[in-house]
Amino acid sequence: MTTVKTRKVGNSVTVTLPKEFGIPIGQEFIIEKGRGDTLILAPKRKNPFDGITDLSMEDDFAEVRLLDSEF
Image 1 (cartoon, rainbow, N blue to C red):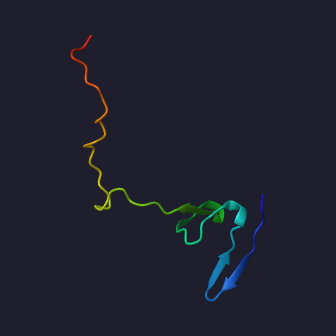
Image 2 (cartoon, rainbow, N blue to C red):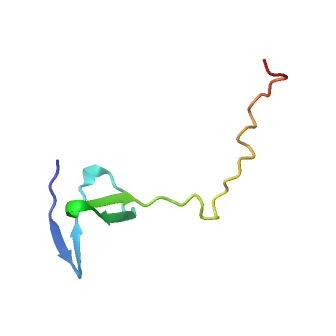
Image 3 (spheres, rainbow, N blue to C red):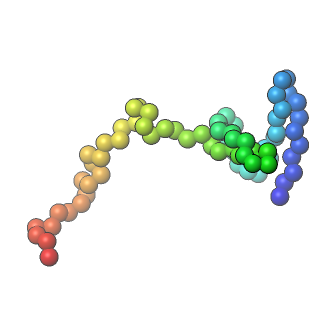
């Protein structure tokens, strides 16, 4: 377990995340404050329903061989 310490930067309090966690520079997080002042950081994910991503399934079954009849 690694221990980190808060520090003041401008009007904010920051926590430095150790390099060994492998978090890329510029990664965005959603932060929540839970019970007992627990802080939860979750990587911000792309919304698949944003209207930009193509959710069509037209080619998903292109390689599927159909049976002539059911058994």
